[in-house]
Image 1 (tube, rainbow, N blue to C red):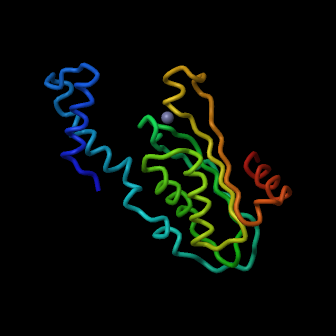
Image 2 (spheres, protein in one colour):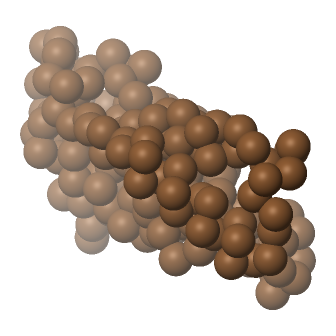
Length: 185
Ligand code: ZN
């Protein structure tokens, strides 16, 4: 849970630290606005992916399931700046599948907290492995990081791509190729 008083005090100090006048009209409500906003954008810290991935359905087939272009917004923990983009989540069932919206929910659980993209990618794949016990899972995230593009370190629009492969995806080039074919169809 967000401690509103602490966040408000911190935002006031932050504004003072950059030389702002926290008493001017436009900034008066800013600490409270940010505290409220943090309830939502850091809401994933109070959530467990298991809540979303525990409701499974039995199936006979074991063909790859891919949910692609799941839009997400997260916060870089090094700069507290947004990074955002798309998640592509695939798994090969082992008798059990989960509702497709639950994969998007799982992405949100890990996006809505201070993050680094590489860890988030692995956490999504690990949650699917843990709760669905599939033959394998593969997750690709492509995101633009404001801490990079806003400071001109990189060109705007440039993307960081991260991959996590688990289970049968780990050392099976044919499966990975199938994943990328489905992704770009
Ligand atoms: Zn950053």
